Length: 223
Image (tube, rainbow, N blue to C red; front, top):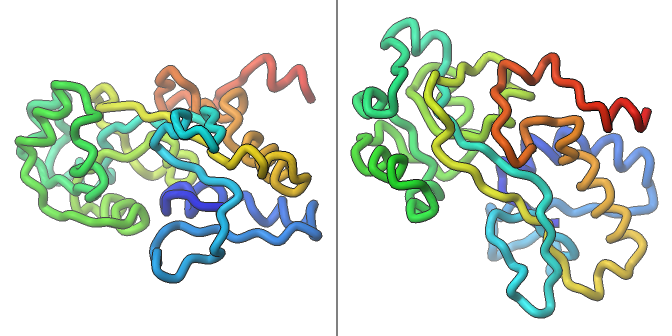
């Protein structure tokens, strides 16, 4: 499987132990793209990506989840520098960029794009892990998916609407899906991104303060 580092580290990586216990005969490879010249496996059966590949004839692409990007900071940072409540007021704060956000600036809305242009980066990183830890320890504020609150509840979302949303796609070659092991892994991926039980993956924005008490009738009915 190929996937972005943040999804690999904070979603699939946290769930994979249960999968391998239940499916000991399936050998997994998780490639988060750090060493393109030395991939985990020369053949990728499934990929999780933020780009829609449905226009590629030999691929099947299906929406897996939605990520909602919002501004987050640590409580320590906000106690020291204050908490902006308007996107314009956030411009003067120490901003941490992920380099992928800079390269994909055209996908943001007009107001968000203007903010990204004006906000002076205090730090630019190309690792979701580095970005998360820097924000957690008070280095600045940054735009990260609200889903991160599920594993980093100490983060505080600023009282500013989400900056952007992005669909997460599950892609595979059409022939690969006919293989039992690939179909089983795809089914497992669908379960760990199930928006009925994990509201941070829903198409509509659900505020992190609602995560803890979230209940979805369809999820309870299945139990």
